[in-house]
Length: 457
Image 1 (cartoon, helix red, strand yellow):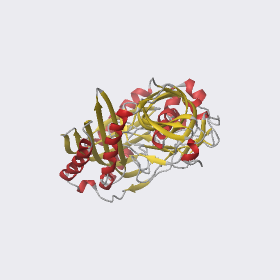
Image 2 (cartoon, one colour; image 1 turned 90 degrees about the vertical axis):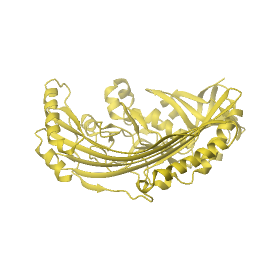
Image 3 (tube, one colour; image 1 turned 30 degrees about the vertical axis):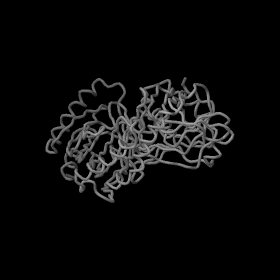
Image 4 (cartoon, one colour; image 1 turned 180 degrees about the vertical axis):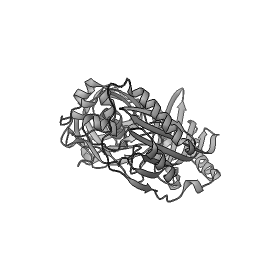
């Protein structure tokens, strides 16, 4: 494979050429209620070539490595035709030539575990949920694993082989009483082996318990509150509400936001540090290099409250005079790499959880992320569940907690940051530009924010 790909890009007449070939092995087991909905194992392979001519890209996909020379020729012709009309030529920032092979170690290789064993394990989790209470009306349990082998070569001389494992488990429960329906879920996801899926019996029971408890939880009363976000919700917030607007390709298309997102501008308190980390072994979607063959590196998006960095591909880095950060990622071989997050998190502060809730006369402790949406700097997130904070102590369970606001106002309203950092990869993924779900991780410690708008009754 190495000789074949290197020779193909070396012989390509384009100004620059690259090829990415992927081989993927995966399996899936899924239950809904007491029904087995999926029990499958599959393999696929394919690749993408890109050719740059006169500042324009040409691309082509293929499913047979023997097609690479022909597809590169096809991409070159497409790029040459597009270059006649290009007004803003694409340039690529210079990066070191790399020759490397990366193969992670798996504690227990999921490819060596039978589908039947995986089915039995998921059926056990599903049964724990369904048997918890007569009020459990439905369940959903889903296991997935995959191993992506990626071979990358470009005309500059870079050649990289990487293997990226991925294991996820989703546990969900739906409870019903007198027409009231509530749901709860937990998920895990890592670049790990089959061991990640083991020992989740307590999580399955907790999911069922929470769904039932939410039937008795009171809906939150709408208003402005001092809110403490748990690690999961704070991590999702920083990814969705802030991370996406730090992606350089987005800013290059959006002039108003580009004027707002000026490096050196203060966006939060001095204690606030937001990181976009490159390669973290064992975390979802992690590998040492991105899909342009660039080494992933750590970027401080916010350093001591000040906007300090953005995420770049080679093209966005060249256009802005910055350095590539290793953030060019494609969700699969059928797609081109675009600027995407990897491991996005708020660094820990110094406050204990008790200190965070202390002094809050009437606030909300919001836990878990149930969903949400962002529109430029405006966000809306639903907490999975919450608790009242009264007189500096936790009170009754709350539900229907929806947080809304402006991300910049919210960052400036952070009062304290906890010391209990958690970085999490779940069973879902990030979506952008029609590419989803891309495995990512995000995280934070507990974070206390004043004057948060919460919708409710």
